[in-house]
Length: 119
Length: 107
Image 1 (cartoon, one colour):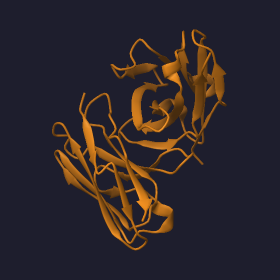
Image 2 (image 1 turned 180 degrees about the vertical axis):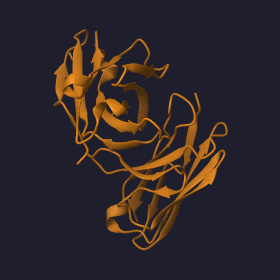
Image 3 (image 1 turned 135 degrees about the horizontal axis):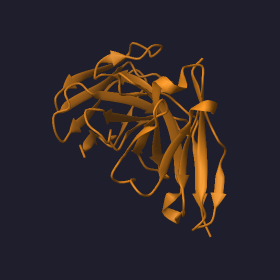
């Protein structure tokens, strides 16, 4: 079974750094893109960026470029989303999802990681 | 970025109804349009890909159509488990933007 399992909820203070993870299993991790999607409280889905773990090719939405860093460690089939300095506006649910190298939809999705940033 | 606009933002319907949700792209995206269902507290789930192809395991009461800039998701014979939020996504060009979502509520 193809699965993406994300790390647990985080509570952080403004200015702190954070790295959340997404571990893939049941498929060849290096042959599919992994994407990250933000969902702020009560809001819609926002496409943040994608990474191809096979060669670490990474694409960002202009809205998130420079605000976050997407990376992957193919040796442990895990993708990451990280912040160097969190802001209250980063409070949201973050989902990872798999995207085929030849198709372009997200399936399946991870269960989500809730990030809360509050002083 | 390509802007995706869904209508309506919310709608109320009854079990057994037929409902249609529309997604409009700010430029032509061919058939690079996908639909997701999201229930409260859960991750989104792929329903329809490439505008009209039903994802494996998704009930046949769900259907999608359209190409270019205008797309529709139709649910024929609403079931209680279909009350959720539905979002479209384009994958014609990066960034692969989503619509704002349509919340389907029980009347």
